[in-house]
Image 1 (cartoon, rainbow, N blue to C red):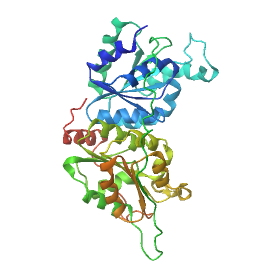
Image 2 (image 1 turned 30 degrees about the vertical axis):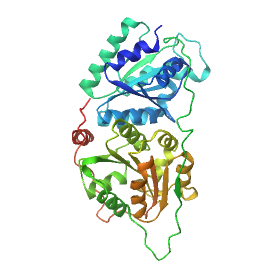
Image 3 (image 1 turned 135 degrees about the vertical axis):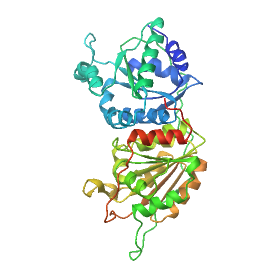
Image 4 (image 1 turned 45 degrees about the horizontal axis):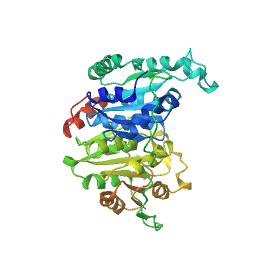
Length: 387
């Protein structure tokens, strides 16, 4: 058994200062120590996939980050691990507990996952080893993880067994959002029937015209958001998500925290936002002033055939305000984007922009560069060393 600080201090030598996760009783002393450490950054994610995407955003900034979870949470994390980290080659260190391990008597819900945990990791092309339970073994485990991540640009996993880390009580029990609250929420006025709405292209063209390439990053959600942005302007500060639906906001949060000098703007869609709605609460609680979240809502999953989402029955703006985004705007006009960009100076800003359905008759182009090339271009542009 080790003390959590034994591992944390050695990990710091490799650059690990960012942690995101979802608690597990096996992880309790480790997470408690991370939360209480003034020299570390911890984000309590709504789910394990969000924790992975947050850590991936910090990797995009060229920094080392850890995502922590129970092995049951691997199910929530499969999408970003396979279609974000693997595809873009964004290396993070995973600490996954082994509930239901063969030699452990555990609750029935852990029985199957305990049997398949290591098989799942190997299927996802994630090498793993047992989390060190002796101080002398820590440096070797970290060195092997570092070698793999440097060589491949992909995650490495330490699987933690029960009673690996000595107990540690939590001192800081405060909520990160307890003093936050929306200071501006402007719901959408009704659009006159004879006034045409904005297209996705018109909205993104306006966003591009209002952002400084040198000091901003735009992360566009998977599907038509990214393809439309690419067709309008393929700038070095753009990242076009492929897969990992719903993870763009968490990726942007990780990058914004790691790089406070950059304006980070996430372009989301209604379908993607609904898939990981809990991420909005995390962004509102932890989001810095350099983070803006633009949701383009046309009420359908347009890239898959126009199937309706349930967005017509809810208000994303009201949800964002309730979550605690400092400024929230909703509307049908370009000015909503300007309000969002100005409002983020007071904290994370959110804009719910209603747009029209439809794509250009000629269709939408796909990026000619690979995801890795786009990631490398962005990192070079922002001066981040590829980890």
